Length: 127
Image 1 (cartoon, rainbow, N blue to C red):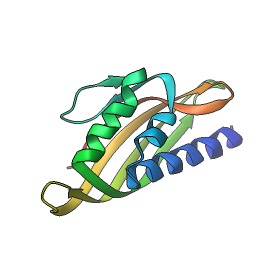
Image 2 (spheres, rainbow, N blue to C red):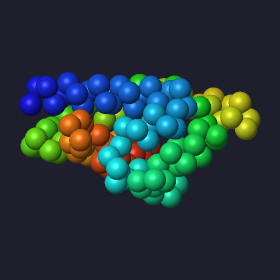
Image 3 (cartoon, rainbow, N blue to C red):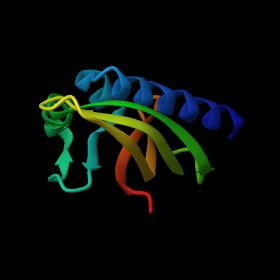
């Protein structure tokens, strides 16, 4: 289980890098083939829609965020979940305005083709 925890932590770091570099391809590569992305105020994206969903986000905003893992549980050799928080800034590209960005997230992970991937991801604004 310790090895799985480390692999998932590495995956979350890769996902954070994808967000902070506006890399839609890298973000989508963090997901399983049937992964589901459920962003606040935007449509749910699945599977082949993931790259275009992230491209739409990155056309509108630039992120500079850092994840904090509050809970990471490996439930079996094939599934795990994490509760996280992200904090940082968001820049609206149309206006250049920057504001604080804070969310709480839930990730569900699956072991696919020998590695951990995001199977489901949902976030909303922290209060």
